[in-house]
Length: 237
Length: 124
Image 1 (cartoon, rainbow over the protein chains, first blue to last red):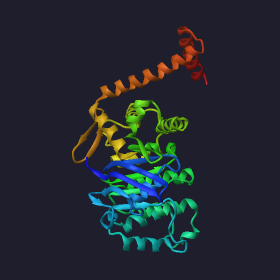
Image 2 (cartoon, rainbow over the protein chains, first blue to last red; image 1 turned 90 degrees about the vertical axis):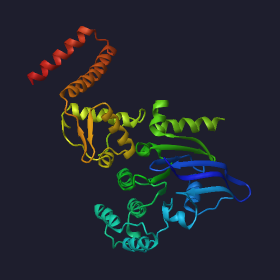
Image 3 (tube, each protein chain N blue to C red; image 1 turned 90 degrees about the horizontal axis):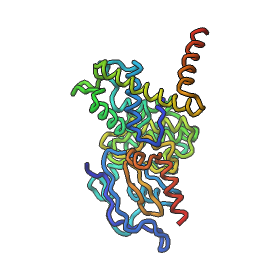
Image 4 (tube, chains in turn green, orange; image 1 turned 180 degrees about the vertical axis):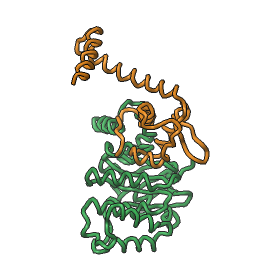
């Protein structure tokens, strides 16, 4: 199995005093749904932004599908940010046209089909959508691409259980078998059934990277329980 | 919607159990084609790789078989259905008996309680 992401000897800090990563090494295999799990401030969003090419490291290398992060890698990466960047006054249809212009791998029909299933009118402006539907529309845009790497930063935060189920189903239905999804969350309980692998991150260090079912077998606990235990222990040190 | 899982044990083993249960109950019949990995994954609310692993395990055990071009089918062996039903019933009875013992019933008392229950049900 080859890796879709290879990170080697990565250093990243904000300013001089705030070190996020020091000599980080991490490989992500293709064809997996990977949960990036860690408490607030552990570096999840920073890692995702580095992979998306929105931040630049000081040292080390990141390659995505064999290319360093840059113009080429961005064509292979579909990124769902934690916060919305969509213009509130644009119509859903206009987002679709925008994505079609930006990304060669955007599948317009897939986007319209998903909107139809949700009974969302493409002529609606983003502003008029409920919070849950805003999340769904953004996810539809991202998952309508045929990317090699999907970066989903907190895709289920702050939506109701029905919307969460819809989002998880959309993820399962729409990703290509060879594509990898890196999904960050601290709501592990809700999402652990769909994960192949889990990565625990604490203060910029990868403290565990493992197949989710192997972890359950080994510990006799859910990923959620293991997570709570691991992070409780560390806090007591 | 999504199947219920107990997250303490590997999900793929629970899927294996669930599909065996569906066969034992006759919800899935011998020779019947099962849905694609992706569709089953969506129904169960799990990752396609996990579903794939569970189906591979079921194939290895001879519960399912695959035909290269047309998909996966439930194996046509009444023997394995009987074995599966026996396995399941063993589990249910085991759990029941140990709960009854926990309540302080003797083995004779447990048998009597079952007989009484069935009789009462028939009279209703």
